[in-house]
Amino acid sequence: MAASTFIFVFIGVSVVTTKVMNLLGYGATTLPGRIALFFKRDILAKLSQGVKVIVITGTNGKTTSARIVEEGLKEAG
Image 1 (cartoon, rainbow, N blue to C red):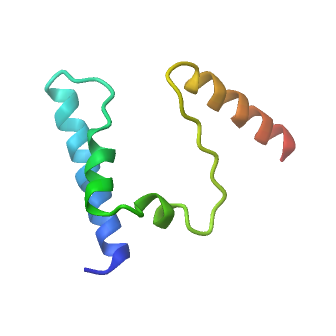
Image 2: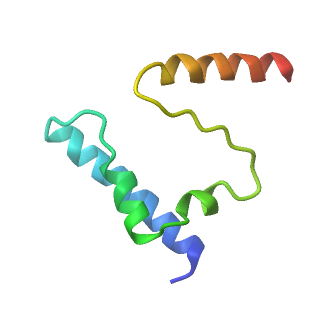
C-alpha cells in the first residue's frame, strides 16, 4: 500500500475509533494516536512534511497555550 493511501485510510480509522470511544462514554483518548504510531512510526513526519508545525504538550494549559500561539500567529500575519 502506498504511503499516502495508508495515511488516508488510517485517518479514517482514527476518526471511526474516536467516534466509537465517544459512544462508549470515553472522553479524550490517546488510542487513535497510539494505533497510528504502532502501524506507522513516522506518521507525524509524513503528515507534517512540507509545513511548519508547532507542538504543544503537557498536562495542563495546552488549550490556553495553543490559543495564545494562534493569536500571536494571526497578529504576525
